[in-house]
Length: 290
Image (cartoon, rainbow, N blue to C red):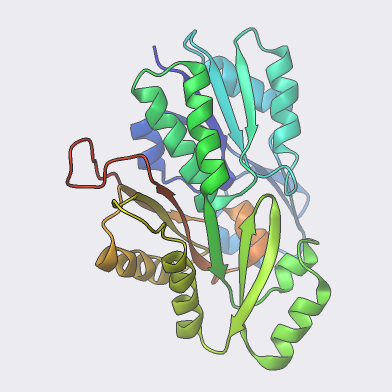
């Protein structure tokens, strides 16, 4: 039986893709007007309209339940959103210590589509029948390489969550710019803003283009277009990527309610990594995923 792969709902892996790859998703939690909900059980519109919303990672008991349900006897890998953003990693560590199965917990050091790329690569290794250490190695390989660059209409919600300095939001409001940021190694880094939405999307694409490895051969691209209530712009970014490179795997990942609570609507961006060891699509061993 394959190694079991578990992640949290911050990973933004589409439900159909998670099912196809056998990924078990543990929902994060929201408290809306004093009532607790599992991520995905309350419409986004209701979450955004609420006056009081707080979020948290799943409890150790919830992760333990997922481990017990997923375990096939060959080990379990739990890939979590960056521990700098959530208590999910700590909850998973506690659950792993109490489990009878062999469980490894990995901090992906990222979130959303980038976290999803880590998880899907690990799940594909598991589906190929690779052992636990190889599945962990596959996940770590992506963690070391994955990039996430995005733009959003305002940094106000990120500032409220404590993840960027207050001055960033002040400057954005004053100059009417579209902020851009990169999330990598567990931290948000501000990039040069753009004055229009179209220019911001072009800068996201430029960051992706500049990252392409040089040298002989064509590295395989794995990419996710991510968004918070803006599927058209995410689909547009993915289409632009496909005009230049046919990805080895790709998906559009919508932010869950927990993530949108911190970013607000309108965020859109790309997460990607280049696999220089894999055969490109169309050659022996290449495969295009969705």
